[in-house]
Length: 228
Image 1 (cartoon, rainbow, N blue to C red):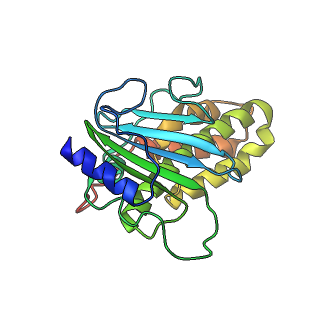
Image 2 (image 1 turned 90 degrees about the vertical axis):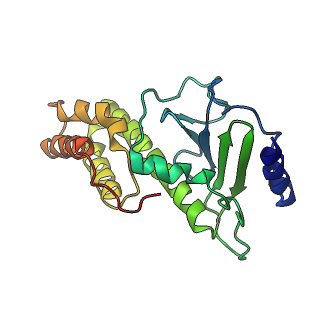
């Protein structure tokens, strides 16, 4: 508890708004460690969303206002691989939340980003637009790449039903984002991709790309040396 109070005191001194630290991860009554990322920006395609990764690797994602308990838009059966899990749980390392917001002036707005880490009676976190903290930026980039994949899955599902002519461009964009590492954990949209691969109403090249993404997502990635 002393550690929790020190962490909470540091957040107050740093000017970070935070409620009293809860005893457990505040997601659907789950017990255990977790890292929570929330994004808010009215100019984004999805202006509000939250992702939670728990120590048992349970992943929750939902959009819009409201908590996990209130929303009906939470995505079921999401998963996270070893390297992604390690990058996210770097939030538990000392110093992650120091110098959270950049002191540089005239930085463009790119959305309000909040990262929170819970571990029993310990709590730490901060909210910022842009940070110079390399490790914190890596955590945020990982969460945003997970969200990008999920949001692509929603768009592909919509287009398959209502706008099949848009699927080709949308699939090309997803393939490019995956290639550049800005969309990860493709297995989380495998049902949507499989539906496209099996759909004779969509273009053949869309079917091929969907099948290839499924195949690549099911192939174990090579071990990353010196991964945290």
